[in-house]
Image 1 (cartoon, rainbow, N blue to C red):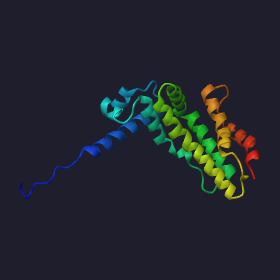
Image 2 (cartoon, rainbow, N blue to C red):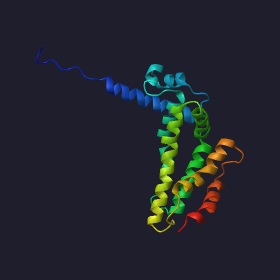
Image 3 (cartoon, rainbow, N blue to C red):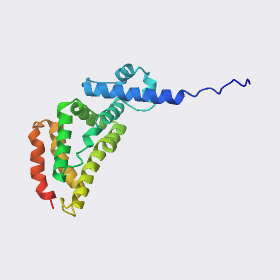
Length: 197
């Protein structure tokens, strides 16, 4: 072996990470464009990868679409640091309503909920990656509100979170009433008296 010989550069891992990133970006773009019936072929074509590459990480198109959507919508979990608990809850719900009403995230979310009936991976991802972080964010706001004396102690925080979210998802899924800007105020007006210290 010559003294000038160098060990071969291991390029497989970076390529894999790069391909995975390209797939997530493609899935997010297609999802937020509202492209109907997005499948593995469309995601692969947009990402410039093979179907096999996608199936290496995800079991189905809904699974990769959900992860791509989650990556692009994590800011919907954020609230203003200076906000009171009531203001933070208001901002949080308003942000969620705007996301599911004004972007293709709403129709995509409905499609993913439908897919979750027969796809256990999508069902698990919806709970673990979409529902749980949003519930946790609200529960954290309530705990902080208790610490600041704005929220009463002894609440069933999971029930409060369900009560705050239910009208939004109910209207999204059944479309029996519009997801208006006023809905945020109405939810807070109804719920806050039972939450406030």
